Length: 319
Image 1 (tube, rainbow, N blue to C red):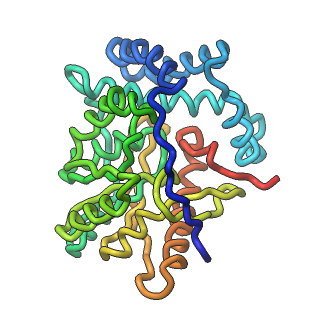
Image 2 (cartoon, rainbow, N blue to C red):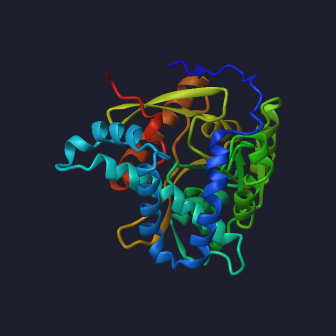
Image 3 (cartoon, rainbow, N blue to C red):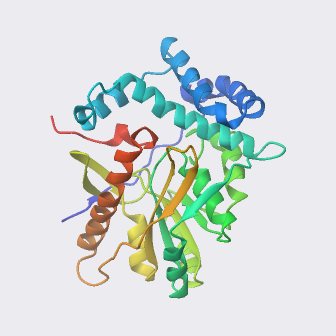
């Protein structure tokens, strides 16, 4: 199996986007909600906010609704696709509230349980570090880091400059710093991927792993030169293979991580057993197999918590 090679991007980031303007208008309201509402009311408040945005034409639930209805709706009688899409968007907004509460006086004090820490302990006992491949659910960005920190682990997170609320130069320099600040409180540090020097981040991560450190990478296709296509929910999803590639190069354990809110409303972060990586032979085949195995772990979590998964728009279904 040959991985898809992404062409190096030469497109300059925009100075400002339409999405930046919309978020700037919404940010004061989100901050008021984060500070004035009890956390148990956040879910309903965010659902109401997204419903109002949809009615005003500020948010289109259609794309997520259509994909989710095809992927999971047929197995659920009476599936409300539009309501599902609103719940999905509300999860993203609630994560924004967690971020804003975290950087405000008093912080965000909600407990986050960590399951499967024995897998992380075993990886560190082996002395070659751990690569955490974190599934892209709506609460993963802050909850996973908070859970690890509370349990005594400090990871370094590898991400792009656009990590946060905005993809523009102005947004990266301003509002994205809010999210980065919230996450850095629970991290050893951050490794930023530079488009002009992509290997620099990989080398920095390898040095950390050589010191038996922990590196976390969110599972997605935003960055990375090599992309694997996996089967998921009857369709196809692309994943960058930087995480398994890093584990293969360093000998570190590759641990899938899933952060979700359960039926009891508690936030839980689960570290699963390592994904085995073939370190000899063809590299592409090894990385493709690791991505396939991650997809096999991912699908049950999506089926249990479908509205919390953030990549519905990236899922390609057959015609």
